[in-house]
Every structure is written in structure tokens, then in C-alpha cells.
Length: 200
Ligand SMILES: [Zn+2]
Image 1 (spheres, protein in one colour):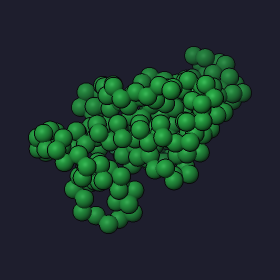
Image 2 (cartoon, protein in one colour):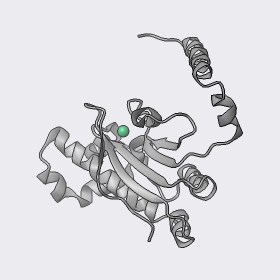
Image 3 (tube, rainbow, N blue to C red):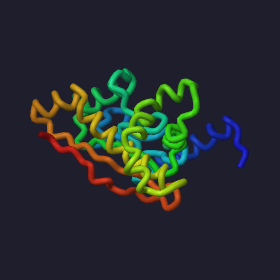
Image 4 (spheres, rainbow, N blue to C red):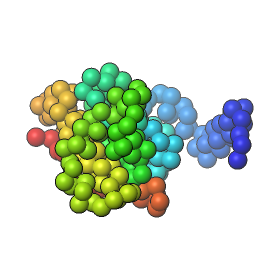
């Protein structure tokens, strides 16, 4: 359906009114404080809206999304979000959630571009080079892309775990847990890749 930006404002009014009707205290409560238990690091893909696919309300998850859910150790955006989530909000769980059929991962697999996004995807390209054997075993086409999507999540979990933010939190006894999940566009289901990292 073709929608305009002003349609979105109408939809927003309808949504806010509906929320207030079912829970009159909803907005005042959220305005007073946010206390999410979860932080989400996911892909910008419009088909993977973080809160919606796990059925969480506003206020329940602190979200960072970028192309192919990549964790760059020098990304001030991601690191600022992570630092606030861990040190201020004291989230209990951080979830890195990739998705099958990721366009960013597909591009890293093809390794042909020299656009800005290809610089962004460099860690995934490096991962692909390192994992030639495992990717070869996955088969061709989509299976190969999907395997790289999984390996990418595992890599990014390790990268979050290696940040000074997480190491300092764990040293202080804040038992924040890290998880690596992957979402299936075809069935709407999330699979746990069993690459969780718990406090040391
Ligand atoms: Zn994606």
C-alpha cells in the first residue's frame, strides 16, 4: 500500500489513543523512567523490527541497529549505546540478533563493491575469507549466505564481549549476559545459536 508521511502521523495518533485507552498510565509511566532489561543489537533491515518480533512494548528493550548487525570496536554510536545500556540502565541481557537472507551479509559474500557500506562490512568480508571451509560445507546459494549470517552473529557476540565496557562490567560483578540469535524471515522465528557469553 502506498502511504504518505502524513498517513504515519494519523496512524501514530490512532496508536497513542488506543494505548491510552487500554492503559491510561502507559505514557506517564514511560515518560517518568525507562528501565529496559534487554539491549538488542540487530540489523537495520525493515523486516526485523526488534520489539515487535519478540512481543515487547516500548520501554522494554534498548535498541541499536545497523547494516548486518556489525560491531566495530571504534563505532562511537554502538559503543555509546552499549555503555549506557550496561552502566546506566544495567540491562541483564544483550542480544545480538542477525537474520537469514541478510542483504549486508550477501554483499560481503560477493565482495565486489567499494561503496561506504563495503567498508562497513569489512569484518564480515574478513570472516568469509577465514571461514572458507565451513562456508564450502554449507553448500551453495542461500545456504552459504545463511551460514555466513550465523557465523557473523557469533563473531559479533565475541566482539561485544571483548569491549572494555563488558569486561569492566563483568569485573565489577554485573552479570550481564550476551546472546547470539538469528531470525528467520520466512517463518518469523528466532533461533538461539548457542554462542552465549556469561559473566566470567
Ligand atoms: Zn540484514
